[in-house]
Amino acid sequence: MIAAAAGAAAGADDDRVRARTLAQEAERAAAAGDLPRAVRALQAAEAAAPGWAELKVNLAGLLSRSGDQPGAIRAARAALEIDPSLDGARYNLGLAHFRAGDFAAAADTLERYAARPAPPSVLVALGLSEAARERPHEAAQALGAAAGAGTRDPPVLYALVRALADDGQAAASAAAADLLRRSAPASAAASMVEGDALDRAREWSRAEAVYRRALDADPRFPGAHFAVGLMRYKRRDYDGAAAEFARELELSPGYAPAARYFGLLELDRGRPEAGLPLLERAAALSPRRAPTWRDLGRAALESGHPGRAVEALRRSVSLDPDDASAHFLLGRALHRQGQQAAADEEMRTAARLNAENRARLLEKVSGASPPPRE
Image (cartoon, rainbow, N blue to C red; front, side, top):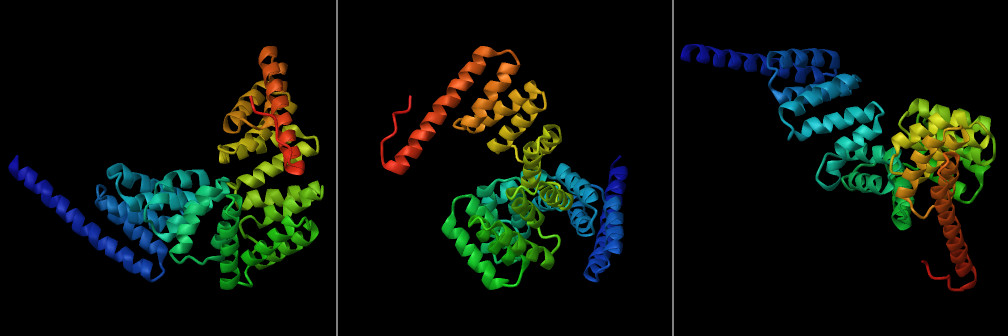
């Protein structure tokens, strides 16, 4: 039995030696730019030593670089099954999810690195994924760390500008915009910043022209088709807006704002059945956004699905208890279900919140004190 064990150990050592030789061959092929040969060599190495987790980590990275994101995800998960502590495997898993457009999975995989050191590429993937699912604070944190580590990629800096602005950090957003203009003045990202300023000034036709200039510079710039569509939506050009939102979702299926506004557009033109799946998609992509759940509830209610509406609207008011519109819609949905007492309570809540909002507006305009909140 001792001899058999010694023989097995020697065989394992031989497998490691062969795997190491193949891994070195893969490294040379990758350095020469021959990714297919590198992948084949590393796959052979991994087959020779299937318990060597680091080989699977490297294979995941190579597969992701070569465009095989499903294969990269499988390899990274296999490495983590052997050793859950391997940061490299988690990096490669998150990056593969990101490159596949699954921003929710990417953010969930990489969010642990928001508060600990990580490579800039990981911080970028985390930040852009959080921005795509409309979590500006988390996006600003990760993208700011990437910029602090020296990242100057224009789309990344633009995403940082937007995240900081959406997070209420106006001064930091302006500073990031200045950095972008200095580092890449002729970029599509710089045009996007200019377009955003025109949008805020309600100069929507001029903003659209500038956003189109960004698309001329980079037809696949993240969020650019959405921005053009939003300008058309604001001017009630619903067909034009729909085409742009659809194009954005074609390029980036996980971009929650495009799904949400596409759904709202369908509601505005009286097609709630068409808006419902888009808003369901937006809610799945951005589950912490109360307005998205409210809009989904409205679409379900107008489509004749009061039960689905109640579910979505309860989610909305749990995330934002002060949204009078969500309480009002929830009251209507409960009434449709015959739950009159609960419906009346939601209507009373909506009326109270509306009164408080009017009082706050009056205070802002005239300086009068609002009534105390019960």
